[in-house]
Length: 131
Image 1: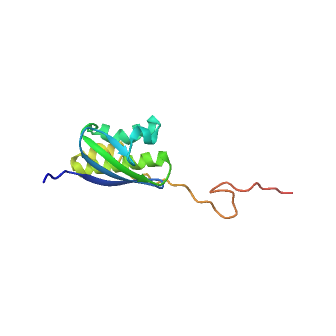
Image 2: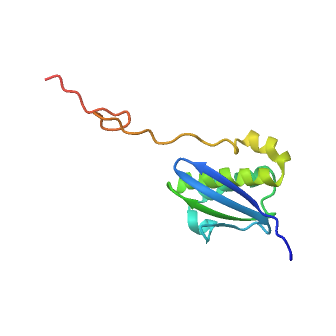
Image 3: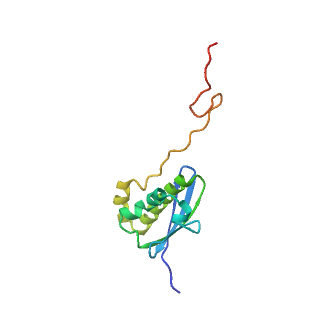
């Protein structure tokens, strides 16, 4: 019985959460059972999630399968990038320095600020009229 080596990691960004499964292969990336180019559509999103692989020069060594939920396409791309970076760390802890320099291991904590009562939005107020 052949055992396949698999590296699992979770990435998050805004309200998106991505479960990344990385195994040795030819470099194909599937997101929610679709090709990455078909799922995201825009090339910038695809470029964002490939960044950690290109930083450590392992873009064509792994097949990556991702399940991503929540948020929009931009947040999902950031979540996948974070998950891929963490999975690469599972594969080889010596890659930590290269991934850290690129900022791929840091979870981007920026989320939408909540709307406050008595206001139009998070910071926007209703127009003030003196008379």
